[in-house]
Image (tube, rainbow, N blue to C red):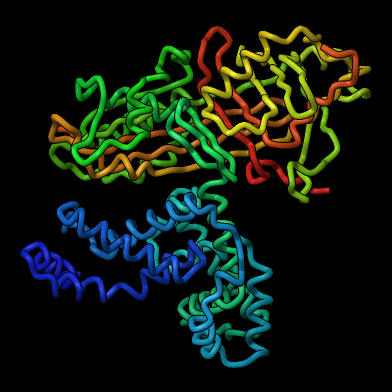
Length: 535
């Protein structure tokens, strides 16, 4: 690693050949690493060029007290994930295969019989075991990096690696692939598993990882344009809270960047969502210089207030650095329906042939369950909305629409139609039906367009801007949990049966009863965030 730092310092001194040698040293491995995400070698090569360009444009961002290799892989992972989100990469085995790599690896396995036995072992092992060995052994990622991808703690990852090796040793011995007396089994085991996963199981492993990273596109602004998207889109006000705090800390009315201000910053500067739209018990925000003391405070506070642990604090470099500043926020809501809804038969959603789970109302439902729901309007089978109240005072709105406006415009559009509607508001057992899909959202985003740019009028810049959201909706109620952090350097009615069936694209809002603006919005456009039926 000292050689890497020496080459990088020579590059900073103007030696272009030193930079070329440093990049050439890792080009093949990093391109392969990127291809594991994007499933296209040509795209991976293009993304690697973006990585190189990023290094050139941000040449002074690298801190030499850390490994250059780790720094390079973090940038590569970020660029790969951004590519996936931008291009809506789908799981296509034919595009993912790298014949040259596959042939090379197959040559290492000694016989077809052994390959068959290894494959049997892989098929009998847990998915988490396959993924954790794949990430730590093939990609060479650290336990910390692997924990971020798998949404687990570093300790859980370490335990998974240990248990995976223990379990696979037993399976390999049983299949007579390795001998019990072989004291070097761990090294052999890792090698065999790496080969087997790359040859026959890597596509499945990558598919699971991508789905875990993001099954809905997370956006920072309620008012920003959604556009014509193919996937699901979700917003929650947690990042807005962090941004508002950043404005306060910098004593600015708006944040603009010296080399151009992205639209997302302009939207955030409008402060269309603030703490006033939430009860104090449901959010937490803190700002301060980065230190172990601040980390401990956050962990203690959110445990006490929400009984939660953070999923993103480990992404911060907590070593003391002058001017290093952190703004953190969490939003946590749980809601329960007045009366649980019965489950409905599994069915398809939109154009998908895959069946998902539903709950709702039909003529077999007990009468008082219909009191849960209010019809806001019903104009046609493709244009309707309902409101569901909860015990906690939250209001859940579901609006069936194909429009792809901003969440703000969709919300206003829904309220406008509700105002004009003169039909029955109450759902009737004899005439009305309701179908709502079970939902699970797990989304994660780095707002890279806000990072590594100097903020006008200051010497401050954002190093990383992160947000996560978990949301669940079922027949009993659900919850919203979201975290955000900004880590940087601050020197600074018709008489007919109505079918309220949310079986195609719809938008969902959550707001407090007496507040004017929602704190959560979700556009459901495909089954990625829906709960797949088991029957």
